Length: 145
Image (cartoon, rainbow, N blue to C red; front, side, top):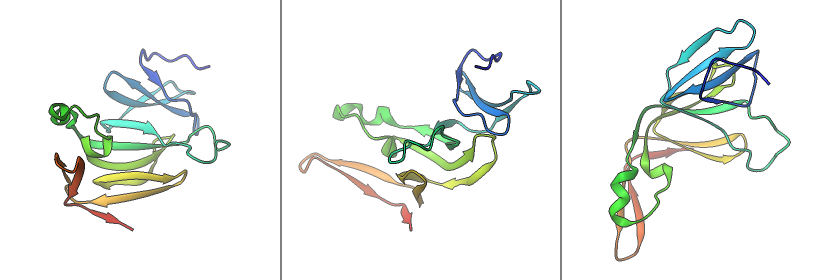
């Protein structure tokens, strides 16, 4: 176990003697050898999921979001718990555990479809609720193959 001067969350993976830590709403790359910390310019970082192959542990890549806007409160009047695909707006990408960029933050939406596969979209999405059909309708944006 590593002791760091961070009172917040410490991400599990050590990659090239570095790990990601969160202090309040800020993320840092912490070098476990030199004890240097470098702020990462992301609004949100979370580990990719291991949906199928649990032997690929620990997770060494993380989804990153810049320019994050959370619109979950917009759906309160419908008394539904919307998916983060609907409520999180921003630019998505992926970094390795040492902070190196794997996929740049240029995509407007990102869905993990397998352990190491993602579907990405460009363009601004709009989500509306059809009360009669009880469906959520998505318009705008284009999924990239």
